[in-house]
Image 1 (cartoon, rainbow, N blue to C red):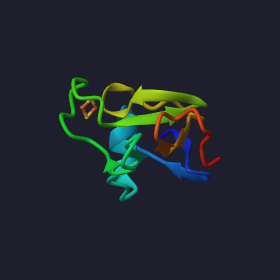
Image 2 (cartoon, helix red, strand yellow):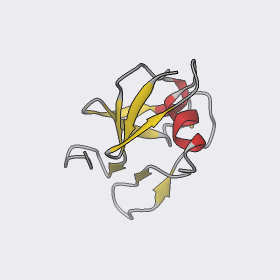
Image 3 (cartoon, rainbow, N blue to C red):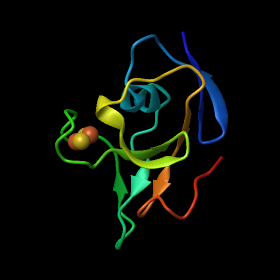
Image 4 (tube, helix red, strand yellow):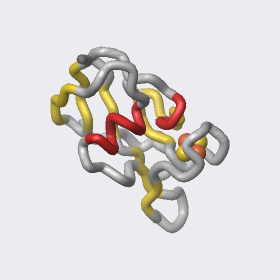
Length: 89
Ligand code: FES
């Protein structure tokens, strides 16, 4: 079971889950805000089409959480706006 960091907190998640599934398993339903209005977003389509689930993964913003598998040691940060203004951890 991979150990990862979510917004600065170490957690262990099930093998083979996506980043979105890992976030939701920790009770997190929204992990980014929209660029202009700052509205919360999480999973919408769940299949890589809508881009609502963008997250910062290992310092790289705009990764689709719903189609990206978790790897051991991943650092997942909530994303604000474009994701180029820095993460939490
Ligand atoms: S939820 Fe739509 S692309 Fe991820």
